[in-house]
Length: 242
Length: 242
DNA sequence: AAAGGTAATATGTTTGTACATAATAACTAT
DNA sequence: ATAGTTATTATGTACAAACATATTACCTTT
Image (cartoon, chains in turn yellow, purple, blue, cyan):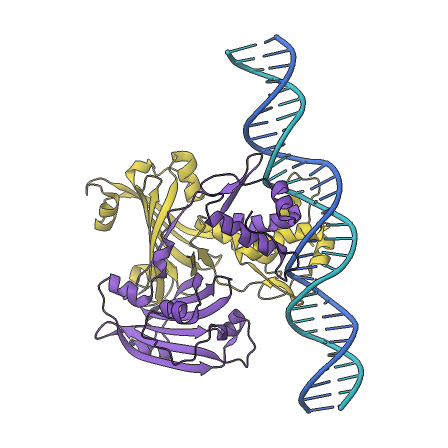
């Protein structure tokens, strides 16, 4: 085994075990329904107790990354790339969680005149410029999403920020802007020429289209975001209860 | 304490503790930031070990219902304003809200052998038949969605019910089945021959595809629902807060 | 060959015990 | 008074040890 657990590290053993499992899963060690070693074995291999290992596995099971079955064992849940609406993780964080390494294909930051939709959402004058960030991201060899984000002038972005950092972390730490509420609209559309080129698919291909309206604590608009996801590469999951 | 734990019950102690905590929280016993008794105390009160109690608390913490803080204790998380409940309107109610009158184009009710996905979700044997309801609905002149619902045998539907009534009302009033939790997966796909015909669009047209897993109060599966929405005719909205 | 019973094997449940750590409260020395 | 230290108290981490239970695989009986 390439990875192992450091008993002298200040990082809790169960946390170490958790990231270790993630790595193994990401490297398709246990990918695609392949059952992983049973708990007693694994615990022995990692030189930790079964209880501690179980803490790690439980977390991944709760996330939906692993599936347990009595007698059969524990295996990786086969699932497309997915996004939970509940938790507020950024795209890259979420992908990392799933063991997928994200590559940034393009990153453009420009100042633009707002279009009608942005103007209306931000409640600003048409001559007030807004910062626009465009991104194409995907797995190693294939782009699968095109994003465009517009930021309210109030946020105070200059355009020189390090946009490779998780976005909401950046906003929170550097600009004291805390995103607390988001409204999203999801629909399916056909790829036009622009999107087809960005995502390297034929014109007319099915695309999952998502608009996202983000607000801060005072319910003031701070970001408007649109995303075009290549079909089959993305599953949006929502959990609701009453 | 009104509630207590039954050590002779077949229901695991941690599960009992979990529902017990939920009840207490629901009854605002520990509501609104009020700290609850510490773990050692609570464990003693419930006559279970701290480890077991912790299992229960952990789950609620994962869900975001409780918040732990060292030295301070555990308290009920400040509730988000999320209007999750409005997700719980039936399709026709939702459309009415938007001023769209729904026409039912097709309505088929049949008994079928479950496919692998249904079987796995319902946790039933492959020879156990399930009730399947198919529907094509849309605006006056154009169909825009194809639905298929599968119901768990436990629900007790016969197939002779009046499916023109709102579904969740029917389940609740006639069968005492209360849907409380739903998980949805949304993605974009290209229309195959079957869907193309149902929705009267060319093969390959973009389609919003939605899977819905519905559970009752005991988190038992009761309905599996898939929906194919014609592009542009449907927008899915989600509101989330933190 | 089909039905039924049994063993094996994985996860599931539960307890008891011990020490670590973070945050506050209480105390102490300057 | 205030800064710094210490004690207290909650959660956090970790282990070992049993027994329960569901499911499959295998064996046995009819």
